[in-house]
Image (cartoon, rainbow, N blue to C red; front, side, top):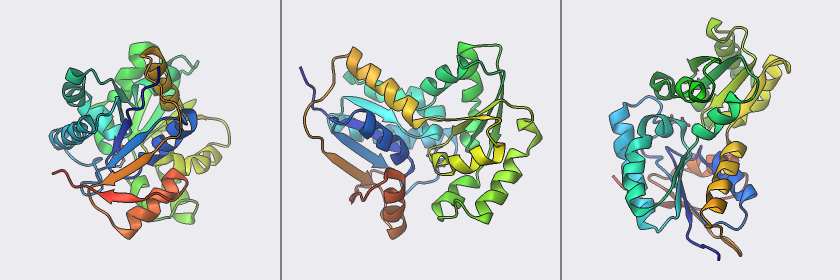
Length: 266
Ligand code: DGL
C-alpha cells in the first residue's frame, strides 16, 4: 500500500535543500514539503532555547500539513532541539530523523581513529558529534571545530574563490584538526565546498558529508514502516522571509529552480 502523505523537511534557511535534493534522488516518488526559516537564519550563533522554540513551531506547522515523517535538515537544530522536535511530532506517531545520528553511526564503523568535525558554533558547543560517534564506537577520537565563516562565504557566492581557499586553509590548519584521518562536514552548506576541502587534504583525509547517508536512513525508515509513496511527486517550498538572494541560493542548493512561498510562523 502506498502512503502519499508528504515528507516534512526543515532547516534554518535554504541550506537544507542539499539534503532535500538527495532525498528527491533516493526517493523519487515522495511528496515533499520543505520549510526554511530564512527570517531567523543563521541558527548557528543562537542559543539552544531560541533554536528549540523556532524548531518546535516549524514542527507544529509540518504536523498540521499532515507530514508522515519529519527530517531535520539542519545540523544546528538537530544538535540543539531534537528532543523538543520529537515532543511535538511523536504524539502524532510521526517519526523524526535528524541529520547527525545516521552520519555518526556510519562514521563510527568506518575504521577511523581520529576524526575531525566542522560545523556551526551552536553545533560544536553542543558536543553532539563526539557524543554520537562515541556511542557507537568509544575508541574513536573526535575533534570538533566551529567554522562559522563558511556559511556567509558560501551564501555570498564566494565558494571556489581565493576567499574560500583562504578561509579553508585558515580553519583546517587549526591544530585541533592535526593528524585526523577523516572529517565530517557538519553543516548543511558545506557540501558546496566539499571539493575544495578534498583538494586541501590532497586525498589524505576522508571527507564525509551527510546528504546521501541521511537519504538512505530515511528510506530505511519508510520501508520499515511501510510508508513509501508511489506516482509523481509534488514539492512545496515555504520560507519565513523571501529575498532575491534566497531565491538564487535555493536554486544553487537544490540544483534547479524552486518557487519559494512566503509563510512566516513566528
Ligand atoms: N543550517 C545550519 C546548519 O546546518 C547552518 C546555517 C545556520 O547557522 O543557520 O548547521
